[in-house]
Length: 159
Length: 159
DNA sequence: GATCGTTTTGCTAAAGTGTATCATATTTTG
DNA sequence: CAAAATATGATACACTTTAGCAAAACGATC
Image 1 (cartoon, each protein chain N blue to C red):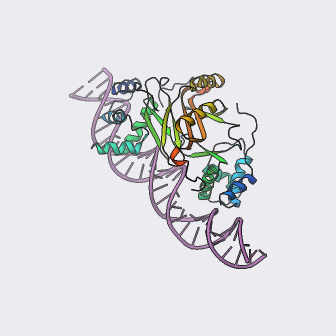
Image 2 (cartoon, each protein chain N blue to C red):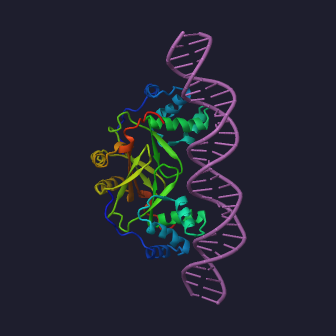
Image 3 (cartoon, rainbow over the protein chains, first blue to last red):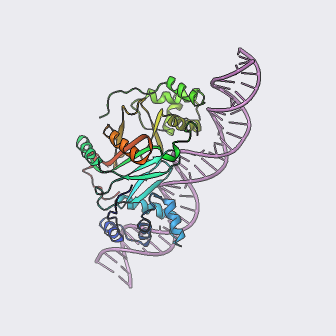
């Protein structure tokens, strides 16, 4: 259901974006971005996830650095933060031209499964909202909540 | 920018929905719903917010009960949980017929201001997603992120 | 309206995510 | 290569939310 490959960020892009804002290129920041580049299927990574994956590669990056780097990469537009209501902020690799590839999320309230889908039909709506509100809109996020095929047969009445 | 009044839930609705699922009607649950009914303008209340408001009315409801009740009212469809990424789950009073009044959020990344807007144009999209995915969709959530009028003149490069 | 079984509450402890602090180490610039 | 600024790592801390359990309250039935 997810679309074709779109150009995402590279380590060189990271270097460029960091330096234009006065931040430094460190091995930790490179490694953290590399985790996202190396695992294109493994979306929605939390700080804890990234930390564990790095530990698995014998990296000694501290947890605080992971948190700080994820937030920084988010503010640079290289990663996108997402909230699924599971208690932690998750991130995914952004695409260089975000208008090219907008994907959204379908969350099962029962089994917590998350399915991605592509959708460009919101661009018109976004332009409309921007005009009416005076906002400069940089991103939008759409989530549908419901019950997936497997969970529709089970009783939802309690628990 | 927010639409006209729509019918929202009452204490009687609460009673009905609780009993059909075997839950009991308690004064605490009534008081908590009443907070939302009494403050139609004060949307987006967190557990802490509700607890403080109740304390201000000399109610002695415990914080854990507030958390439990908010989650319960959410599962009954009386309240809707929303996440703005500010570290806590917030709730707003749902409308009896959710298809009648879908409002979404425009969040300023700089000053954290939240503006609501009405939008029904997603119903068609929702039906489409449901058909393609096999999901039974119960709710959707749309958030636009950007910079409000007041914050567009200020430099966004750092911090 | 009293009784019984079940649910709910309130308190407190604890889990979990994320942030602040600060000494030490690293990067970039010249 | 040296200096100045930034970044890291470790730990302690803050904050939101959950878990556990004894006591209280609800509501169905008699």
